[in-house]
Image (cartoon, rainbow, N blue to C red; front, side):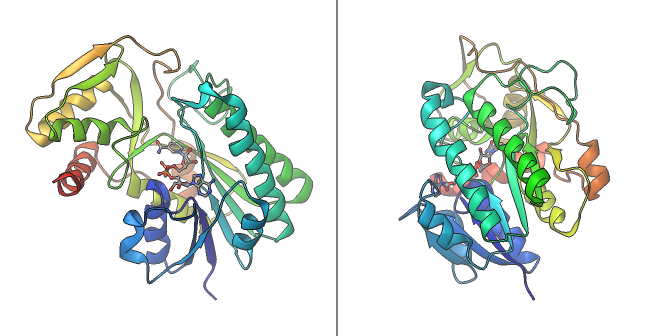
Length: 311
Ligand SMILES: NC(=O)c1ccc[n+]([C@@H]2O[C@H](COP(=O)([O-])OP(=O)(O)OC[C@H]3O[C@@H](n4cnc5c(N)ncnc54)[C@H](O)[C@@H]3O)[C@@H](O)[C@H]2O)c1
């Protein structure tokens, strides 16, 4: 029988691509999303999936969503690294408390596996060693990272005490088609959109901030691969293992688009760690996975998508 997967936040950037990959691999897909959410990302699969609208913060909505589900992917977040420090109480209430409620409900409903997307870019804080391995100390410097870290810890507790089956993916910086170019997460679509519109690109700091970028289809490939595996390790970095500075990204974007970027360098932000590159050996070894998309190719695909969307 086909396994039934619930994607909490499935109408978003990562969730919609995950839905595509799960359907390709012959899973049943249920998407849980906010009331009246935009169908833009999932219009092409509306006849293949089930949609449940509700609020992740509402216990009854969660109970309804979890009925008959085998595997649940937790992809909801109400904050971003850049804004989470503005109101940590809101962050705790909407992300941490609601995630705990979700874990309780998942346990009661006998969900056979939970997959949680954590943040490889924020849980470690300022790295002591590079590339960052999974056992590197976790010292986040933003509320978003503290919440992700704490959800990881509760998953560990549920696993140890109640035998909950779960996997955590500490994702680096995913990019690709459908990523929102209007929010403060994901510099690649933000920069591309500015370039397409002939607008100035703003960079906080001198552009030396280094990150690990991974194309979205490589991300969903890894997540779906994990469903067929049962490694003893529960936590995996999910990144390309390569670092690019913001200035490198501008250079690649200029090459791909054949346009010159107009960049304004502004004062650096204190929430940005100077460098973050994830070691991906563990996931490569245990899930027999590796990222396949070169950054130029991934940026080209993202550019072509945005050109169509914007024009
Ligand atoms: N995009 C990244 O750079 C990145 C990096 C690391 C981790 N993550 C994590 O991956 C997950 C998915 O990220 P994304 O980029 O796809 O984000 P996204 O904003 O595109 O998708 C999240 C979805 O969750 C839905 N949602 C939010 N609050 C909800 C609520 N109360 N009830 C029901 N639905 C709700 C939103 O409508 C949205 O469609 C998040 O947990 C995020 O923290 C993202």
